[in-house]
Image (tube, rainbow, N blue to C red):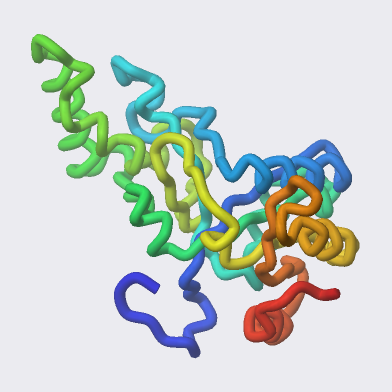
Length: 229
């Protein structure tokens, strides 16, 4: 974990989780396997304070994560995903890995606060330069949200991290996969068949965890560090 860590802090985690989804459980699971084979999380959407006002919207595209511990990530799933709670999966990475790729936790500047006004002033100043797109402030804005600016939903509880641009990764970079337990045996066979390049897929031999599991069961799976075969 970056910074101070304590294994007894149940509300902290050394990992961040990217949540994937689908129209149903089967589609979500297939989407996960496809992402793992490509080894790339695509930054498809712009985020942050300048997502609608940056001279180069592509520079604000990011991949999103939550640092909520795996045994508590169900709260994100319940809020964000459809009524079929099995239509989700997750990929967990060490925070240090995401940070090494330029990622980090989101900063929040409440709409109308002095720091939100300071950021607005920097963005306005950038637009007055001969080359607005090259202003350094646009490298900051994907990592700053303005709660209260667009409606009444405040999302700090999601404890979000972002990395600008696509995130490429290898199997060794993945801490665990968060998959509904109904798919664990199938996933284990899929990855074991991939060992040595036999199937043409990539072999992710990290733990498989269901987000509905208890803290102790999640910890046991991480201690075992093996597939459920």
